[in-house]
Image (cartoon, rainbow, N blue to C red; front, side):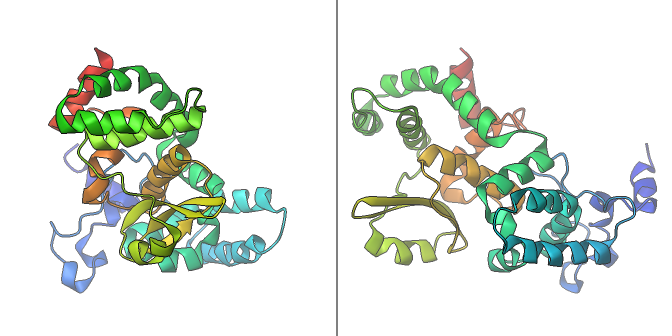
Length: 291
């Protein structure tokens, strides 16, 4: 195994070649600087181009995809082209680290909920929405037990959130309240629902967050990344949470410090990705859920 990586480099495996010094920018040409590697249990972190394809041919597919996105009732063809251009898209996102604005301009189809779920499955081989919701529902009884047993000021905050539920809450409302309680339990902010008048100001500075804007009888739940609304009209808070994880994988985003613990619970305990590497706080929570 001593020269295994050298052999992989000779075969042109992208995950090995991307960290070669000659491929780094002049300012980053140090072996330990800006190392690109899977950090969230990605199985297809940087896949090679399909057989018979290269950067030029895939770029032509991307240009065709831009025109297909403008057409109606064309989701099947878009889905096929998104799968075909996966390697080209990952090469851009991983190696070039473009801004969200640039990614959205070049790959507008990626910012649709269904295509985010497809991209997440291509990267991790896990079905995002079904896995996330089933594990959330599975852990809900023990999570509620943890919340009810908590005392002090945090216990009062948790009780206040749980009392917001009506006598017969919907499944989405119950899931949303459990996630809010989880964020409080982990010591992180739940402030994601400013009024419509304050949305643009608050979200312009947001690195990665879920917002809920109320305007008269309508409500818009969406996701903001780097101050840009990337998803809107998601319907429910739990769905927005699952898609937030999907975006983190699809766009190779680091978790923001403000909600890092919550997102790691989503990833490691709900989606069971890299679940062997837990922080002390998450390990304690896992033990309580499995007790």
